[in-house]
Image (tube, rainbow, N blue to C red; front, side, top):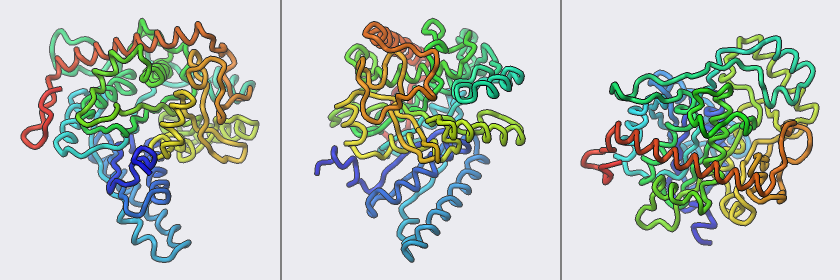
Length: 436
């Protein structure tokens, strides 16, 4: 069996970087990654989990809670096979790193820190992000939930946006252009980090972006790339993520992807990017008081019992698609996408909470970038699909690709502009990369 088929099962250390790991989905992804790694990978392989938070206090707290989760997993394993926990515990190394995605100097500092080590990265999960809401339109929310529960809780239109949010100054220069806050946290900070860390990525490295089930085409305009005028900046940033990832392997975007992820010496091919979404789960991004949070969970459970394929409710269940994208066998993901087309991999569920990974329809791309083709494992039923969706046609597919090429072009131009302002990557004497 060659290394492409086994997908790095011969590696002694498997290194994964997860951003925004201190709570919600990011923490759940970290926990689930530990669990699935321990019981699916060879005993000779160690997981080095790099989890990012914004400050040292959150990092220490996340380390403590991940340790607690690991101990629980080990105790359960001991119940099945006495003494196995001693073997399993040594296979997980947890390390916190700091980054504030709204401060590009912080993003650059993390890149330099990791480049200085010159340790190869096997996967990254770009999970961190912000919502950009200031609250909910409660009358509208209550009415929609009571009269149209599944659709209203899958594709909410009642959050009240904070329009035109911008980041704090990045360099202090008087001519510095504004950066959209939601755009920077959800897309651009990760975009820069991907480029800067590319020397540490091999042919089989997986770059996993977290999108959303509610990333609808009307939430994003290429004329407003950063969502500064958007009513739904969060959803627009996720639509941008879909465009970015799903068109990343097309010939029409190669002029931009080749400079974004330049081939490293000895690489057979560039690292691949994948897009996943967690379905509908309860996380801290909603920012609700405790009582309303309980009511939210109750509504999610009812939606699932009514047949919604997307209401997984718990973040741990919602993490199934992201963890799948990180550690799935080659035949289950990269080879499958080569055969059946690139897809958006969502966390789906049955009525009883039996989570699974399913292809999700993306307007303009369909299920796999091929008009009229519906691969096995796609969610196709009427329940849970966007009511205003338009069937992808040949013209729509061409439009999606053109929009993808445009956002690639603009993001690469923006990257060049900000690298010019921030200066090149410098990592001292220990590393080999000296310029970004």
